[in-house]
Image (cartoon, rainbow, N blue to C red; front, side, top):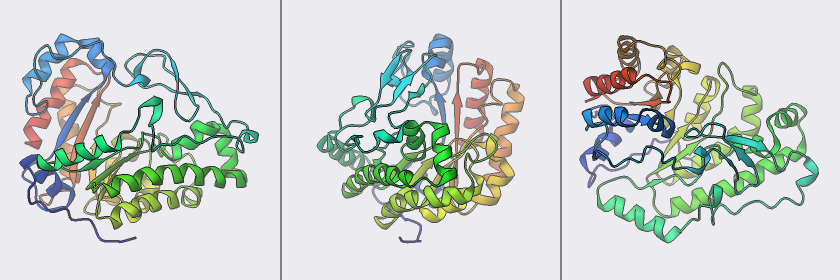
Length: 359
């Protein structure tokens, strides 16, 4: 695996993409990219009142037109209030429409099922029956390049490696497997990794410039397993996939909820060039120590603060994060996810702070 940071050429990129690459590659961007994510349940709850805020901030929501949103449209099937089965045979249940559900049955809960288990072909379909049309994907990448955008790949669903293991086995079972060193776990990891690697390699063969991955590695205050066990079972998997991306000259974006401080340096060494951590479970000072100047941070601001803070405290929180992690060279982007428990005044405060400080 190469240890050099990828350097995607700025030539031919549109203004927005060039600025983003300057942030990721520490090349002195003109502004700090930022994103406000409004969950389907949030739209469903606030409706026209939320739309009014969106229309007030066209730089954050470019191209949005009044009346273009179906407030009751949930989009992703995991947001629906029902049960459904994914390609791996896990049954998902959602108790609150507009928010993601979780697996409630696990096809490999009994190890006796392993030998007869048929792994889904992720080259053919993603989770929940969404078919992959590789010709259409290639055409989409070409269109993005022609428009001056990045060739982005992200064909692995959130929870593609670590989370997939406990989706298949059940969380308690997986903890026992790791604690006892069950050799069947090695076989299962190899099966999941091979499936993921095939999809990753296909995207790389299509010339992607950035690959996105998502896997929630942490709990609120710690990893669910020891760093030593993480390095034994999970670290080599990420190193293999991310190393392939880095060897192909592509940036690696990795999202992870939860406390991940003990393994951030491992992920950087494995090839991550943009990390998306949550500020609350990791701590701002810890993120500065582990990340600043070493890897670009797409900082997930404090979702647990948003429902309870005043607008003034929201503004202070965002300024503090920028002061701590930002620099003229780049290396910081901001994300704010707003659930339906966030007051409209605070959603507006987030938008106003982003427009003031990021642009």
